Length: 533
Picture (tube, helix red, strand yellow):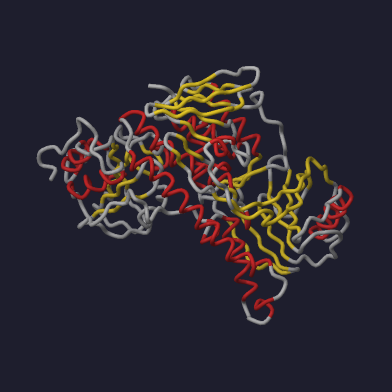
């Protein structure tokens, strides 16, 4: 079967290619550039625990070696500390990393992956769709045509794929603007990120009263100053004056020594493509959406697009088209991003307004600081990963369903599990293989060798039910899971979202949930074995 064509060799396109390769699907990545990305220290990304874990799985590299995992967060207003959060060494925390470093890690992993072919200097010119596949024509030094089974447009804000498919991209322009500087200096908060609203020193030039500092490796920092609405020019002289003023204010004295590495102006747009699927063509990342205000990062959502799309394309590639499964990509991901954009747009007037109720209602300003903190840390309505609660793949009317701390459709909590070979691994390590995960909660199994309990209790019956599922599945065992009682069974999608939690071993419910998760179609040659219903 023909490979999947991926247009765009940025982090989202390369992530999709590696995620498909992990599921034995070949890809061709069309890169309009020469095959490398120029270093830009001021162009960085904050990755939440789920997307950081995704990149670590695909690259085989701990991101802590290339970025900074925050040790804490500090929120200040004028001279007062509003909130301070410390992350324990084993607690999930955001990772701040330069985007060219992410691309370099992904390119290195792709170079070692025989199922990924990167075609440099290949600019997309046209797309032709047929019932059996898609053809992409390219121009440039290596201009030719490529035949694929599906095509994914991961080609950014000015997506050629989106334009060729005549997909509208409505939204708002310049929702926020930030002046950005990457510099090497010594600040009082080693490893901590900082949000400072209304700093007490006198501002100069076109700057609003908010600045963010995020640590980078080797003593470097990225500083972002919120700019007021409008198109006021930020000159190098104004930015240098603001850098010196800010550093002096934070160190309560003269401006400390610093080495300026990079500068820029980051403009946040909010846009959402009308359609994310057109036959065999899909959109992902900035080609499908633009967001990024209030600390929420567009790259995070782009990586989640790739994770969601990969297992669905892999299922269609291996087992034949499942239209309901492929359609669910747009239904799930577009709904989540749209909700994020709505929440941000509703919060912005109060958070950024110069007057209003915050001056007369006690506690309003503190509530605004909490909203901003949640957005930066990947929590709450403005920052938490989306849940597919209204997914067309969600099973209905399961008699044995029970609530746990993770709502159905939300990302699962990363816990230690025992794999089928008896090894102890993290639950997230088993994601992205194209298989469903069936997790039995069995207290006490962690202290006994697997051979002592694998054939005891409910395990044989559960193992038979897992074998009979309409999609490949892996049986895992955990000592505990937040909110899950002993002997409950959790069904988890390949991208780490909870399908359902069942009380005990209920083969009929488990089968129905798995069938719904893969689009409601039992694949050829797989049926319900005797004794399962």
